[in-house]
Length: 133
Image (cartoon, rainbow, N blue to C red; front, side, top):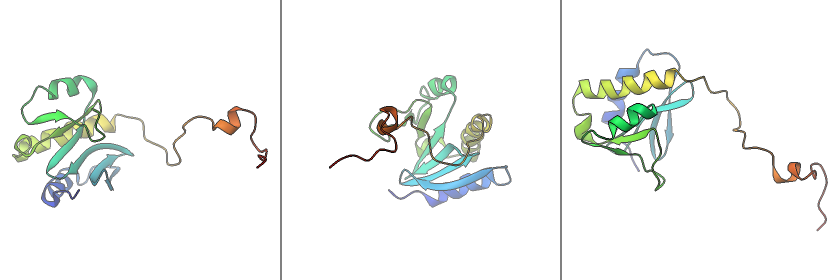
């Protein structure tokens, strides 16, 4: 899915000069991250916004806002905002700034591979042993 480059540029102008902001193509769109945490993104013409859970519940009551269901299941804390919900510069600034404040308050992510627990071989005591064919 392509993303709206005009919307991406508007977001860039809002976050310009803020520390530790990076962009990354993901989810078929463009994600903006603060210290490694996705806080806002552009997917097609939709704005994806990450919010604290209490703000997430309130945001879902607003027109032009719905649960982010990118994987087919809702992702708590993330919403999609349709174009009418961020059409004005003030509305876009409010979405992006609020999401950035939340993400900036999270502990920075450390680079590296995500830990997903012990592998089946290491948990069974078979680490370092070769299997017979």
